[in-house]
Image (cartoon, rainbow over all chains, first blue to last red):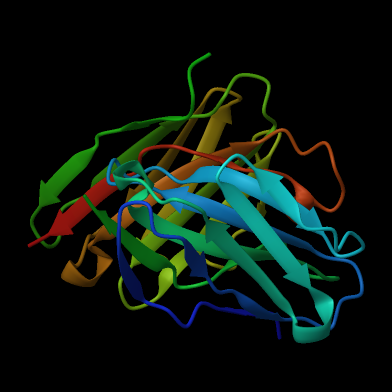
Length: 116
Length: 118
């Protein structure tokens, strides 16, 4: 069965530190998508990135970067020079599309607290 | 453009009462999802609709839960009767569904309704 593991339940850093959020997934599919969502204190989930299983290139967007490694089934997320506004819960998710289901499987989330 | 709109944002009710949660998806999105978030179970998909038709309700916990989508701009999730274990944050999300399969598409989430059943 599909599974997403975010082993870090909570991380605390001081502003300007770099921080990496880990995501490990399990799937038998050869084609799949991975996602990261951010849930700030206001509550709504905000889409950050989508990556398909055939594209292992790392992605950088400003202070955010993602490292996708199929060999280790990981899709880690790094925030460089963290800021207080980065404080949120971050969810990694995996697409599950089979004969009788088509949905996102979310990890349990990692709460990031960035202190000034 | 307005995002996904949910109401109410907070709901406190007593066990046994009927609860109705409302959602307005992003205009033009033809998929609508209802999720429940709890500390114990994380984010769970309850049901989703395509063009107002329920496609997969396998995540609906029991018959006390029902969802409808009478038109493209409105959906409700009803719990009757409510129980304390239903206390959670309920999210509505919508998607344009341009890629196949559906789970490959970005979903846009509303702010959620925090439900407390006493």
